[in-house]
Image 1 (cartoon, protein in one colour):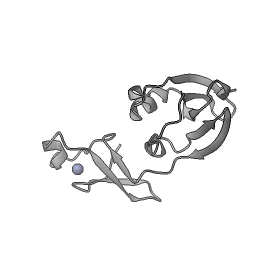
Image 2 (tube, rainbow, N blue to C red):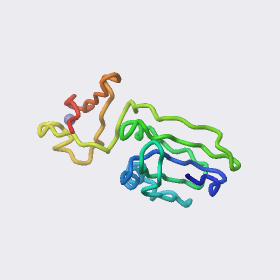
Image 3 (cartoon, rainbow, N blue to C red):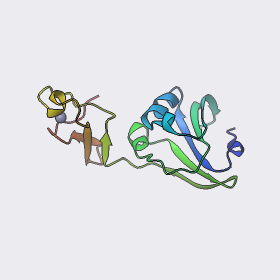
Image 4 (tube, rainbow, N blue to C red):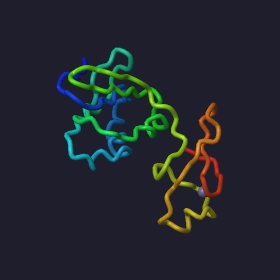
Length: 140
Ligand code: ZN
């Protein structure tokens, strides 16, 4: 059982694949937050066996779109006054900035390293992202 009671107002990122919690923490840049953030690893889950959970102990406006790209099964719980007021899955983001790199050696981002790496969702059904600059498909 997750204990969301320990958070009065904040965000609980639940159903993270086990061992992926730290990756999510880094992708969301949570170390920059002033409030307390807890990562729970290998929590028991009926649905998943094991899972990771991140608790953010403050109501903040956080851009969680990237989670839809990393793992669409992650659920977001919004906690207000000790109660869960919202629960949802994150949709695929329209743009991904500085998480994945373009592999095309002739892409301008390979030459000008200070440019943001931007990938744009061009096919939502097939989850295809293309580099904003050279239109290369994102490859694993
Ligand atoms: Zn490119």
